[in-house]
Image (cartoon, rainbow, N blue to C red; front, top):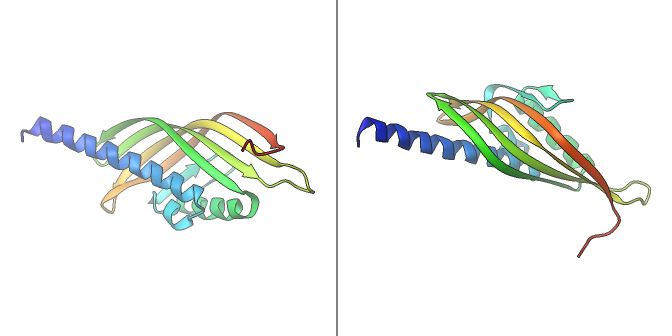
Length: 152
């Protein structure tokens, strides 16, 4: 295989691995699996999720702990990603929608929060795979509803 073909093949593989990494992050977050979620961050990482800004692995610990105490459902849906790879570094911007259900209080209805935005990531190839070195969560819209009943 010639060098340009090898480079294209590597780029396709890198894109696949980065998309898998993004899905793994969401799976860990949605399933309250702190170990899985933390595994997506580089050893030296930073996550800026608005009110919560900290080391990525610490972000995983605190996010999963809070979620386990305050939510009934956390569910992410990823949209398209624009990924640019340059050697052992990459940048990506990925659209997401997240749905979170909070239990009702004092016999009140549950609350459904739905939000959308983008994960703007700087990634590093580390320990044989891609990891998130820096993440900025850009929230673009959100809406909340009282869940009076389940449509089913």
